[in-house]
Image (cartoon, rainbow, N blue to C red; front, side):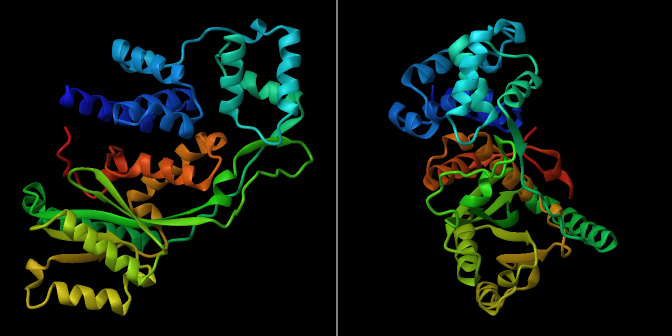
Length: 350
């Protein structure tokens, strides 16, 4: 039974990562949390669902597998009467900001209707005078020639050490830091036209830094809380990775952040690798080309985690909940996406 639960949770994690609909995502998360030992009250507090919801979807999953968690088309726009449309409009007007998933769940729970296309929900928002607001993104410039050269160098270095990597004598980590800022995680909502959107955040500058690393071979991600991205936290994370991989050599592939290159970090590496030949170093650090975070596979994990949080934003009543979701999605989870194989295929996962 224990092995069966492990298999279920791994299957659910893949479902959560690949899923495109937040309602299916919510079902998968509630079941996964329950199978991992969370109490009903804990799941209720985090996801804002009732015990009936948890029991229902857990039972369906056990009996039907992942197929049971998928949405079933149960209606079309004509299934909502004029009175129901008016009631939905009233419900929307009573709120200050909106989330598409909230609207989908409300209509499904209240009227047992699931529209085949999201366009039907957009029409409802439009009629209520609500439009989509989103933040803008900025991508740093990079020199493609330098990026390609560095990619080739990393690929060649990894290929040279393939036997050690497969034997797990040398552990390769793609590492990076992720900074969660409360105010930045609410950039995608629906709001009334011509009106500023105000979201109840006690302290929008509340933030949390995480150090993270994804194992090239096992594809497992580990994270560690940090007060900030600095030399002290960087050394602490290197020590953490060593403790988790005792008796093994480690190679860290990361960007050229100043605190990755600081004197404190250099001193720690010198002490750790003291009197050892380079081929026997306990920790080897390799840098990506500058100004292009897309080189690092763990960036995709950060993006997936933040997308996951935004899907559940309407449930995040506190920053503690945001952190819970981030840690739940990333720590000790196995990831399997093409970017992990940018520098060659080494995975133990078939």
